[in-house]
Image (cartoon, rainbow, N blue to C red):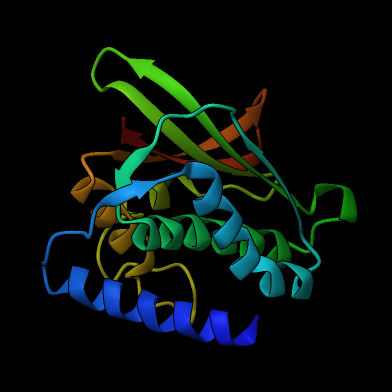
Length: 186
């Protein structure tokens, strides 16, 4: 398992480096379920360390995606790790220390048929002034953050002709979590 993870780490670094150099993603047939399973496996150590649970739901019989699975996996992984960090930093009680990762088909007038990946947490949410700047390169709310994580994620999704969005979740006027979602065309 360690050897396989080391090989995957090498592939990840190679693909992200190639993507940043502006080469096209290496598109190939991929299943959403495999992408989710690989991302959750990679996030496992971080989730256990932060004492955050994750539940996943991947709809049955989703169409095959034509994507670079390693890049999409990295987007999912980044969103899951960000959610876990937000939950942990807010010192939330055990009942709110969970993340929901869902993958479902959608149809919108603007995009047509898409598959939507969403990561939802019950953390403190994102301040409204920060929501507007989330995808700016080098903008970060983290003391040690470089501000390239979400900007790179959005670039990866847009290079696959998808869209990415973030929104706070409310119970009346109270923020009760945050949801990051992205779509990929089918």
